[in-house]
Length: 314
Ligand SMILES: NC(=O)c1ccc[n+]([C@@H]2O[C@H](COP(=O)([O-])OP(=O)(O)OC[C@H]3O[C@@H](n4cnc5c(N)ncnc54)[C@H](OP(=O)(O)O)[C@@H]3O)[C@@H](O)[C@H]2O)c1
Image (cartoon, rainbow, N blue to C red):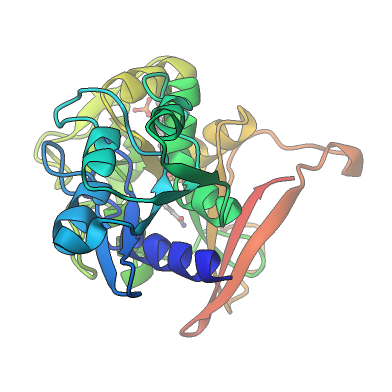
């Protein structure tokens, strides 16, 4: 239980740096000293210190004989910074508790092995489900080379497109490395796609097709071609997470190709009725119940007057 509580603290620390570490993972760490003192760390922006080092430096001499909790397996290779495993051993940490193994081929269990070889006790898998969920974009990117795709949909309760753009939608932007809209949305709505109603940095902006000269979302990358290739390219450029903001044709393209990892629906207590409103997924559907796409609800929240539903493929 003590391990779970400390890992939860490390997970909380990692949330505070989401959006600022890509292409590196957003990791949280806690050093619990021999007397029970806690020292926290979270990944610094690229080129900065890893979470474990931040926590170890905060602990100073208290790191000797301590337990270090890290959401992700400590690295053992020389990247922009030195191997964390060396620093952990040098600091005299007695035990390391890890959330999940690092899927990056440069690590993939070698960090854990290096610690054990140096005589450090290592336990893996504490709060692994929560950590895997928190790091899902990083894990997908390292395994497939592609960004984790979130599709945002704003709908009335009868499934027609509604006006989006609350503070929560801006938080989603801040949490993603890139945000994509179709040329139709660029032409009709002229969105900025920046983060204004929440804290955080602006994501990189991507348009499927061409955006008009002078559109407010510029500077943006204009991309075209098969969506698979576009995702591969973005992944190669270090985009770990992509937020697709529509519109309905683009949403349909990503959905029908099975390229969406998570759906975020903002549902307004409104009924448009009639047949004039646009469906949120605009394209060929299915005419049989057996062909209906089914998902799994991950969370449901009230957000002011609206409902916020998160869903994954079943
Ligand atoms: N409720 C919501 O969540 C939400 C969110 C965003 C926008 N919207 C609304 O959606 C409307 C615009 O939507 P829309 O459906 O007309 O346009 P859209 O989905 O934003 O963009 C469609 C356009 O993107 C280009 N494109 C390039 N590759 C594509 C691909 N693989 N799949 C689909 N499109 C591709 C094409 O541009 P070309 O025509 O140039 O070839 C296509 O016409 C606006 O009225 C906006 O207000 C609603």
